[in-house]
Amino acid sequence: MSNDRPPSHTVLIAVATFNEIDNLPLLVAEILDAVPDADILVVDDDSPDGTGKWCQEFAANEPRLSCMHRARGAGLGTAVIAAMKYAIDRDYDLMVNLDADFSHTPQKIVDLLAVAKTSDVDVVVGSRYVAGGGVQGWPLHRRFMSRGINFYTRLLLGLPVRDCSGSFRCYRVATLARLDFDAIVSKGYSFFEEILWRFRMAGATFCEVPYVFVERERGYSKINWREAVRALYLIARLGLGSIFTSQSKSA
Image 1 (cartoon, rainbow, N blue to C red):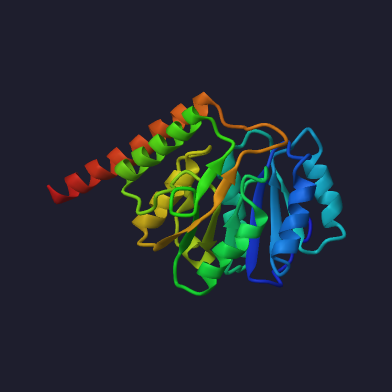
Image 2 (tube, rainbow, N blue to C red):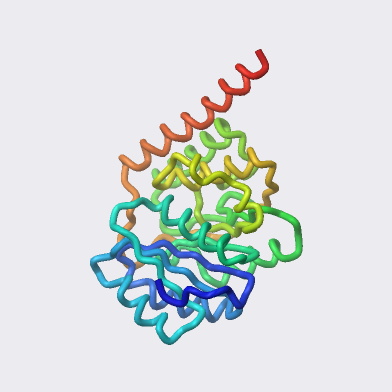
């Protein structure tokens, strides 16, 4: 890992990558322009296309950028957990997570941070499903599937936000430090639903800020139907497990 130092700023922008060489250089440049006082951490899972190598080389001359290199196939959820632990260990105040494919516009980071810095909210969710939010570039079946998964998640996990499955969020690091990361069961995309549930169980507060999701133009999506089915199973496991636990305690 490069630039392993105490933070000079209070905000960490975390990006998990696998084969994003077509996007990462442009994304880093836009993030640095949009939030020049923030640091960036790229967590790369041994991308064979050179994403990690580019990051390491660029970070050598850019003190705001750090790279974490991991073994391939460890899972998106564990990459975000690694970034969260990094933020905790280095005493950042806020951590913003976004995807590497420009589906989350770097300029919108400012909106999430504005809410986090002027309130006591623990999680600021970039939301596609509140007024002002939306999706561009998705076919009808994918829109339907996303709406269905979010309804399913809110129902089973009792989450107070409309967009439970998106990864574009700002977390208060002091609240992250109260979570038991060893208890997290999700390794893939269902992590983003589970971490909100973990926050809710810890008594955290939430706020949603609208943004428009834009389908990637370069590279390819890593999610597949197996991952989607696994996510549905894990959400049900968490939700039904908590219901049975609360019933046994009240019995």
